[in-house]
Image 1 (tube, rainbow, N blue to C red):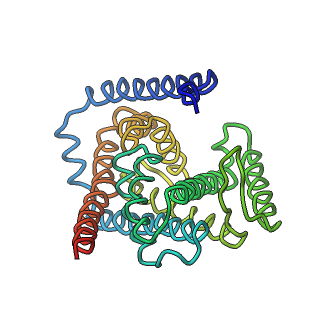
Image 2 (cartoon, rainbow, N blue to C red; image 1 turned 60 degrees about the vertical axis):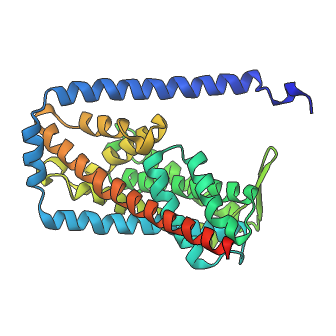
Image 3 (cartoon, one colour; image 1 turned 90 degrees about the vertical axis):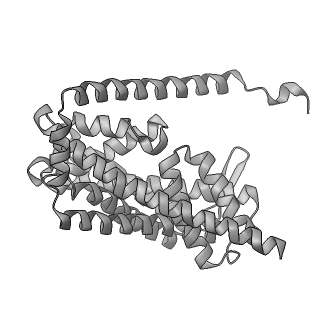
Length: 314
C-alpha cells in the first residue's frame, strides 16, 4: 500500500466538508437563538418555575427515564446476540448497553465513544474490534427504527403534523417497515454495503426491536413531558413532534448530548412568555435524563476497570 492510498478521495472530502458546514450552521443557529431567548429571561423566573414542578412529576420523569434506558440496553442485548451469538453473557450485554448509551449520550460522537466503550467491555469476552463495529451499527439502526416508528404513529394519529400532507407520510413509513420485515423474513443472514458486512436480525427480533423503539422513544419523551407545565405542553401527541424534532437537531449538531441545538429548537416551539418555564423543564430534564445516568454509568465503568486490573494482576 502506498502513502497515497490513505488519502481521502474528492467525494470523501466533499462529504466531510458538507458535514462540517451543516454542523457549524446548526451549532451557530443554536447559539444565536439561545442567546436571543435567554437574554430576554429573568433567571429568578426560571428558578421559580423549577420550584413549581410537582414532585410526582419528577418521579414520573425518573421512571420514564429508567424505561427509556432499559430499552436502549435491550438494543445492545439484541445486537450482541445477532453479531456474536452465545459469546457474551446476558449480564455483560446489559451492562454494556446501560453504560455505553448513558456515557455516549453525555459525550456525543457516538460512533467513536460508543465503539471505544463497547470494546473495553466486550473485549473481555473475546469480541473483536470488527464485531464491535457491527454491534454499533446494529444498535444505531435499532435507534433509528425507534425514531421512525414513533414518527409513523404520530403521523397516522395526528395527520395535521404533516402540514397538509395528511396521513400520506405515515403510510409511506408503514409500507417501508412492512418491506423491511418482508426482506428480513426472506432468510437474509447478512447485509453487505460495499466492503462492510454485518449479520442482520431475524424478522422476529427486528419486530421486537421496533416495538422496543416505540417504548423507548415514548419513555424519553415522557421524561421531558412530565417536567413541562401541562398548559404549555398540551396533549402528549402534540408535544411528541417537538421533542423528536429537537432530538434530531441535537444529533445533527454533533454536540455532546445534542446540547444547544436541542434546547434552542424546543424553546423556539413556544412563545417568549412561556420560555422561562420551558427552560426550567429543559434544565430538570438534562439532570434527570442526561447527567444522572451519565454519572452513575461513569462510576460503574470505573469500578469495572478497577476489577479488570485486579483480575489481570492476579
